[in-house]
Length: 246
Ligand SMILES: [Zn+2]
Image 1 (tube, helix red, strand yellow):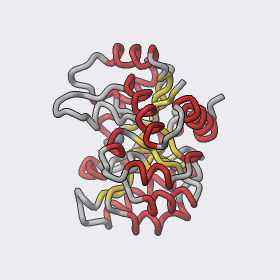
Image 2 (cartoon, helix red, strand yellow):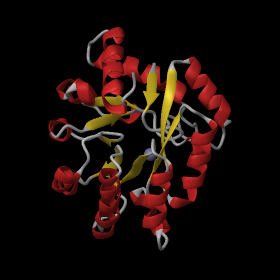
Image 3 (cartoon, helix red, strand yellow):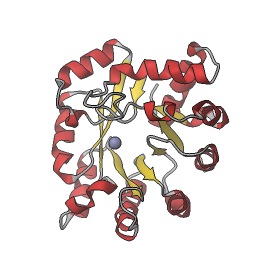
């Protein structure tokens, strides 16, 4: 039984969400952590969580959409978290590839960190080319933090894990030439699987589906030269540990 720890169900354009969820469940993907990316999809994420008990919502402003941070967004975000005791914070973070100016990004990210700590919620981080900035914030991050869509170096991955944080792995790690080397150097007790659906598509214009998560697990297990059953047990253990699933 898998949790897709990062999916944006609200962003599907060519698939019916109900079918996406039903087919995923049929394939053993029974829980979805569904982050929002900007205030204009907070409502959609709330509606999804109300409709599907399998969906855990997350609320935040993705570093690509900081212009959507309208006045008072801080209060609105805090109120949403108060009303949704199971919600996570995210996704949020720093992306220096998209935007080299980090000052505003760090400011907004720090507010998310504060809320995650204040309400004891897990934090979902989007971090690209921001290793130094992230390392400087390590001591402020809540224990239950996921660095989503990890594609960094083995050294950086180990650095994150040493602080007790988790790495979210999706199909993008498989596109790295040294994927096997990176995966083997990680602490497998601190990884989680995600599809980042409908994104991370292998072919252009084809939306990714959470039902593909077991396939991702098989490919990772293969690179680790480990049986799929053993790998599944590790992921199951990690999910229990991080998500508090039994
Ligand atoms: Zn995302």
